[in-house]
Structure formats: structure tokens, C-alpha cells
Figure 1 (spheres, rainbow, N blue to C red):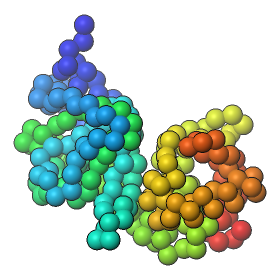
Figure 2 (spheres, rainbow, N blue to C red; figure 1 turned 180 degrees about the horizontal axis):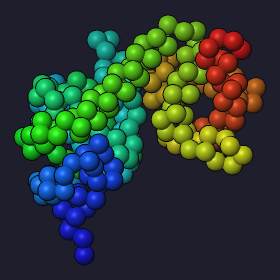
Figure 3 (cartoon, rainbow, N blue to C red; figure 1 turned 30 degrees about the horizontal axis):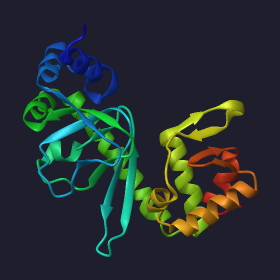
Length: 234
């Protein structure tokens, strides 16, 4: 029967930027890692708390968000299997920069900074992989800032395309299912739109045949059409 260390070792090899570490180092990290489960809606990390660990999502989904001074939630990202939470804190040891919540029942593998940082410092290629993850998230955040200045339809289209790139799954006839079950409130917090405006934009895209909407499930039927809205050429 597989032990907890065996599961941790398999996850580190297969799911993360850590898979290129020497076997002995992966064994050490696996022995010191532990698993943690979160119920849907439960807090995973809290902004401002000590950043002493990194979490690798093994199952489930999480949202990364912050609350503005006027009590509005801004969702920065949605994460799934193989994604990491806490990479900034691993590098600088400073407090968490955002909140993270489970949007499904979720299991994560937890690695502590005291164990992980020496492995990164001793293996520059693995450190570079972590930096690449940070760069990708920074580029995504920059795109969100730029898109917030777009008209509503373009902003909604751009955000849906971004979700399709990150969480899309090709289904029948080449259509793309956004593999996240999101409330319109959460989708609005991600797109920077009110729930009412999200409903309006989704209805527009549905009525012209760009999307199919079944409850919380969104299927993109015409990516080119959505892209024309995102770049303002529709």
C-alpha cells in the first residue's frame, strides 16, 4: 500500500516545477510534506498571514482574491490540479499577498519554506521554473488590468477567453468547455463587472451563438467570434 510519502513523491514528480530535482531531494521533501483537505468555501490562506508554506493543488479548485476598501471582492485567478499557491511567500518570506478559497472540495500538498528554499537555492534550474510561474501570473495580472479599461462586451469576451485558455477542455465538435462551475457573482468579480452586467453579456453571447450556457456551465461555440468582441472588431 502506498504511504503518504509515496503519494507526495509521485505528486512532486508529476505535477509541479519540482519534478526536475534530484531523487534524493524529492525524497527529502516528500518525507516532510503533508496533505491538507479543504471543504468547498473554506479558506486556504489569508492575506497578511505569515507566508511559511507553498501548496500544490492535487484535487479541486481554488480562487485567489482580494477585498477592496469598499468591500468588493476582486478575483485574481482560478487554480486547479497542479497549480501552486504561495510561491511569492516561499521566495521572500513576507506575508500572504491575497486570500485563497476552495471553490470545490480540495486537497493540497503542503511544503514549508524552511524545507523548500534550500532545495531551490541548490538547484538553479528548478528556481528558474518557479520564476517562470511567477512571470506567467504577472503577465496574466497585467492583462487583467489592461482589460479593465475595455468596454463591457470586450472585457467579458477577453476574460472568457482567458478562462478558456487556463481551464478549457475541448468537447464535442471542437467546442471548449470552461471547466469551472462559477456563480455569476464570482464570474463578475473576475471580469470586473456587476452580476447584472455579467448576465447581460452572457445573454448577448448566447443569443448570437457564441456561447452555450447550461446553469453554471459555459461552452464556447465560436472562439473566433468571442475574439472579435475582445479586440473590438465585432
